[in-house]
Length: 70
Image (cartoon, rainbow, N blue to C red; front, top):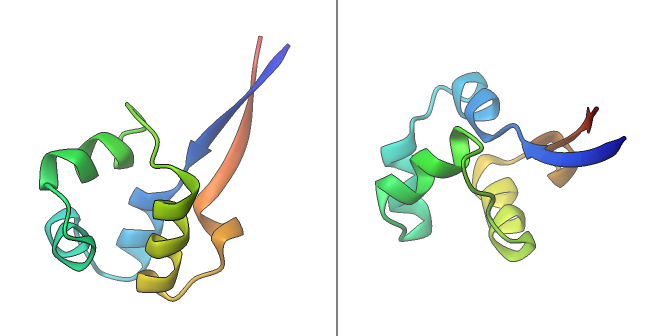
């Protein structure tokens, strides 16, 4: 069994009443990149996750979860 790290950016954005376009503007990133992150197609690096947490006003732990793969 392997653990896979997934992010909760989409969930936290919804909780904060924000969207991908807003986050892209805050981070200076392409909205398509944000879309890949929120759908867990790709993952942002730790530095970016820290920036996202700061922009959203949440603890880094709220953005990450571990799923067990079978």
